[in-house]
Length: 80
Image 1 (cartoon, rainbow, N blue to C red):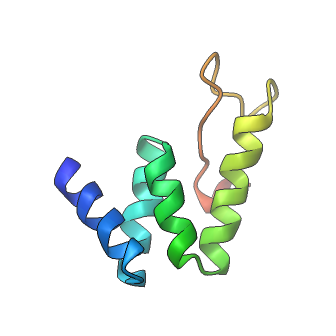
Image 2: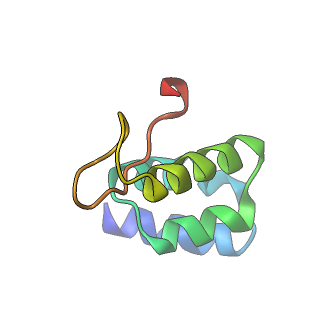
C-alpha cells in the first residue's frame, strides 16, 4: 500500500488527475500532509470539498465528527 501511496503522490505532483481516487482513499485511511499537498495539485471540485471536510474535522475539537484526541478524520463525501 505504501508504494501505491507514493506513486499516487508522485503522479499528482506531475499533474496526473488519475491519482485522485487513490489519494482520496489514502486521506481517509491515513491523513497526513503528503496526500493533502498532492491532492491540492490536482484538485477538482469534489477533491476540494473533501479537503475542506478534512480541514473542518481537523479544526473541530468536539462534535459528532470528532475522532478523539487525534482529531483528524476525513469523512467520505456521502456522509456530510
